[in-house]
Length: 178
Image (cartoon, rainbow, N blue to C red; front, side, top):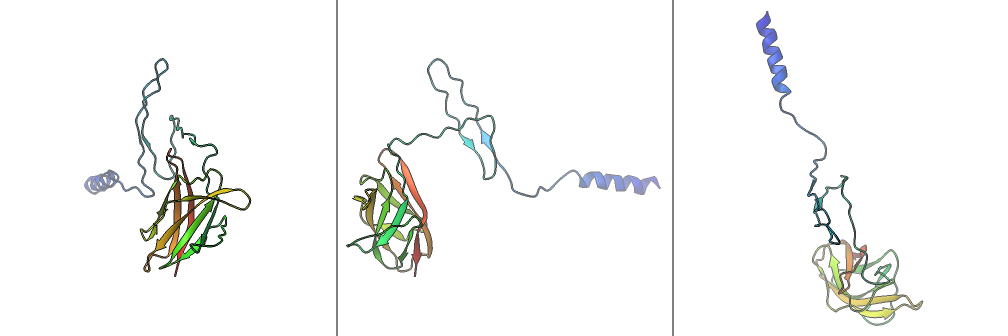
């Protein structure tokens, strides 16, 4: 009588010894930054946080833009290489197999910026950005891109970077269509 009970208890205990976790996995790691002495700054520490996690006991500092005004791409348009162009705060579409001019307007945009199109590698800038001005005086840039004839359909993000490291993006504002 005690033997079957003892076996049952042992099985219950053994089943509880391992486990399976469900839900999102999390991995956060951090290094304690050094202590400042005198006028020196503490050693920076890398803090890795997965999506949805929070961190505590760490001051996270984001550097201010070096430019004034900070670059801010607010309007994007696609137009033929010559002629007038318009831009919208919702972005624009560009067709597969075309070569078009991209225009962006917003405070802090200058002709010394570099342009990058993020997403599948099938929309390629072929000229460097040039400074332009909107009819209302808003600064902007324009550059020419080519789109492959088999380009993946969907949205792209335009990234503009100043030589001093300031960056602005127009997220998902350039949509490749057939």
